Length: 189
Length: 189
Image (cartoon, rainbow over all chains, first blue to last red; front, side, top):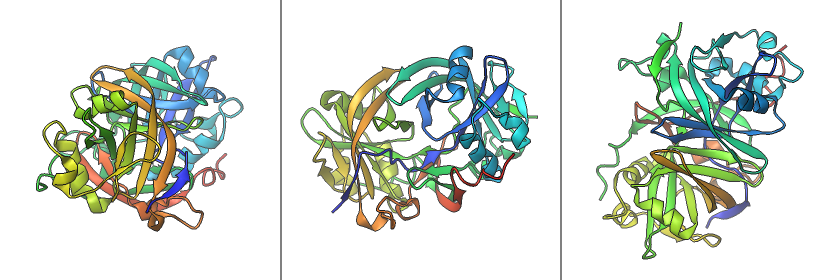
């Protein structure tokens, strides 16, 4: 018998996404968001949900662009810092010692030291309540050669991305491989 | 120097979400989706993105409701099967041997054997291209007592949810804890 927990955002796991934007003075900023995910295959789109109170909000709207840098567990402290400080009064790149790289496709910066980045053009902004959902079309994905597999695509075991557990507010790493999708269920029925 | 991978939906990790709906005859159906995530805190909302070609699409629109059951790795085969077969010609509950439970809050079924379920009322349907993004307000979360921590909330280490790697199409489990969010970044700057 299941127990009622209440109306909460308890989806497991949530990703750890570092959203990159320029502010109205052209200064690079980043913030960490766990409310986000893939939302369309064609065109390839991802969404991040931000509160209006964040400094990044105006950066996305003003430039109609953002990046998503995927931190590896090696940079967990920096990723967490990016989710606590505000770009309004903090130069998060300078404070963390990480490098703001300019996307060559969209008007937004990304974290050079993080292994994978998605460069996105803003397509939709849906106001849902406390959060506004920004849907970006992925114009390109760029990745460090070290995290690519034999097929030339990023390999999750090499990226070592972080996971976030809502409510308990803990970060986890990726565990062991379970199996191949669209394959391991074939034996059923 | 990062390498260009192309315009792809490469966000790491993606979740493994089992979406529950009734069809127009009232038969319970489930499908597995990895395009989804949390998208608002107040009201608490989650989104799943489905292609119009899926059998579940009409089920969500017709009932203005859906559930999201979170499978644990112990049911990886069933979760994968739910993403391959179609409810149009397959009774996935009967074939998998899993149980369709009726939500007491929304007009949608969920998988009784999966440890956590979110019961959602449809609030928005945003057509983005190949996928339509269904935004649901979470009316309640229900969880098995076995996966609750000392704080009465679900514990990710007990749920043992699955992760999905886009493109490589592999499932992974959750790994070791890295640290506390809004805490481990405090030492920076």
